[in-house]
Image 1 (cartoon, rainbow, N blue to C red):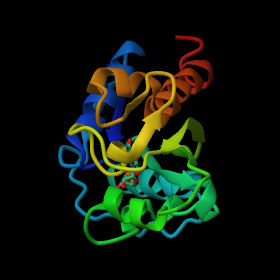
Image 2: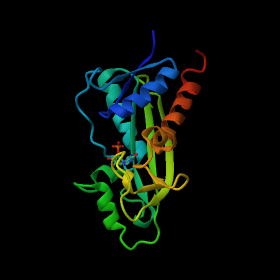
Image 3: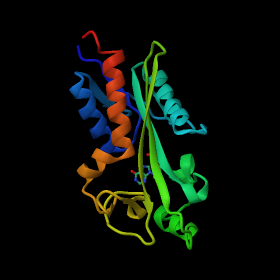
Image 4: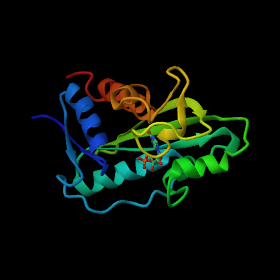
Length: 195
Ligand code: IMP
């Protein structure tokens, strides 16, 4: 029988991406709903890795299945790494516009997205992989795709913001794509090496 992993996310896009990665390993993903998980833990960590582990541990405990979770955010050099782990809680309305207002007149526009992907097994084994994507904060919003800070995050290689890139292209170069590719590599090495 295939190994089953519960994916601790409410985001259907993330569930799809992780399902594809797991099926390439011969494993299967189920949603929080399918695993009967209704509560979400408080994200009290001070790093992306800590928060990803908090979510994966809670889902593993609630379901009795191996669990995968991620945590991500934007770190801006001129703001000493903020909003970082507070990216989702930075402001109540439009994150991109709020960031632009904080960056008004600022010359140093360097920033990076970071993502930690964690997997926790019922036997206590824990794996964490991190992905990073560097770029610049634009002076104004550009593009209509994506979400969150995408309209103000410029990928220097393509000259486009994440909101201007097709989803498939963004997923290939994004912090999240990179973290999950690394996690898949760790899973393959550590758990699937002899299969
Ligand atoms: P979470 O890890 O999915 O909870 O994301 C935390 C927050 O970071 C999101 O609410 C967004 O504001 C921001 N964020 C994370 N990844 C991205 C991305 O790929 N594009 C834009 N914003 C992102």
